Length: 121
Image (cartoon, rainbow, N blue to C red):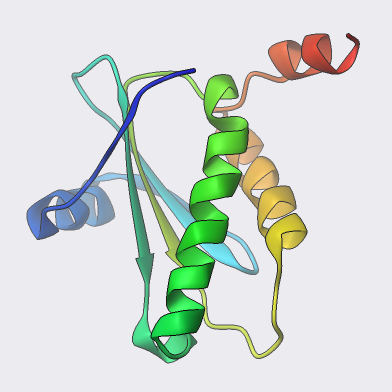
C-alpha cells in the first residue's frame, strides 16, 4: 500500500488550483499537479453549499475511501485535490467511485494494465 499525505495548508490548495490541471465530473472535480516528492499528496474540499457538516463529512469520507480503493493504480509524485460539487440528488459510494475512475483515466493517471491484471486473478 502506498503512502499518501494530506494537504493541510491553504497556500498548497491555492497553488494547485492556479497551476494544476483540472477535470470536472458530475459529482467531483479533480485538480492535479506534479510535485517533487516521491509520494502523492491528497486534499479534499467540500463547500458549505453542499449541505450541513454531517453531509459534508460523509462526502469527504466517501471520497477518501474511493481514493484509497484506487490508490495503488495512481502513479507517485502528484498533488491531487478533490472538490465535491453541489448536486440536488444524494449520491453514494458507487457513484463517486465510478466517476473517480473515469476522471483518473481522463487525466492519464490510472494504470489500466495493472487494474486488468488484478481483475484476472
